[in-house]
Image (cartoon, rainbow, N blue to C red; front, side):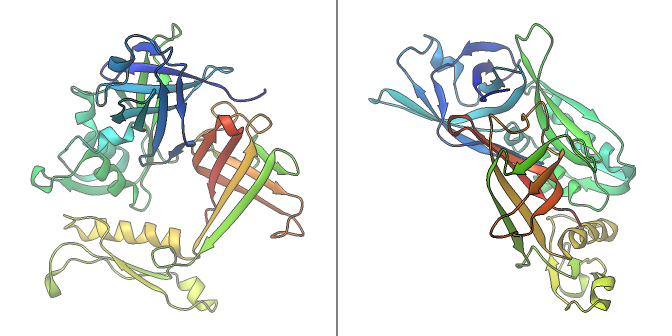
Length: 359
């Protein structure tokens, strides 16, 4: 399909309507996205040749920058300008953060008992629909029920609540996608998606990253550091001493029976938790992620030759990595893992899925 080139649009944050096309806007670092969290990118805007209304089109807190694949028409990334610096130089520096940053600027309250955790996510996100950017919510039931309460006095934001919920066992995942409003392509909307799992998971994905092939280099990072590996997890809540609420100790019994050592991890998943069942859900999920440690693949590929981001694969999708031979894997290696994040640097012709092996 050829090199990835981006068309940059400056939009009104409240409505999503396109205000200007900014051909002189250039990222000075790779664009990136991660599931369930915020990422930021620095930009440089060359003032020579910019539209007369460039200043109002990039106002911090008032605007939205959107990158669209010029070939496929797919929106790939969006960010809200939060800082802008300029003076006697002929360029202006802008730092923009993905729309998840707005979720950390809206407080919320909610109380639910034995509710589907997708419902809890949707309810804590309701403030986004009032006096905010053009958010909509697209959710599917997770099939997991639980209790969740957040009071106004807890001073929690929509972002902190969603991250707290998705750290519970069986909880859904979430992300914010940027889409065209309609076929006229004059405006964008921000869709908060809540799914049992974001993306498409397949045993044999269509997106194949091969070495030799489109892959230029890769890195496999394995860790059993504190916070990344444990065979026993206990989650703690509020209180002190004997009155402090706590989960049961959740232990990887099969691994211990197979000769693994006992590695303990005790932590407080969030402030304000007073429900033991909620703590057990956090400990169960943490153990599932940590019991054999983490294995993260960072794959750098030529964007012009690799499966196309936003068309062939997207955030949360499964992708395949096939290594014929390398110094790390002289006999080759193959894995299918989910893209929990990605980076895109069109100027360097580089796309990099960040893949986490699930155990």
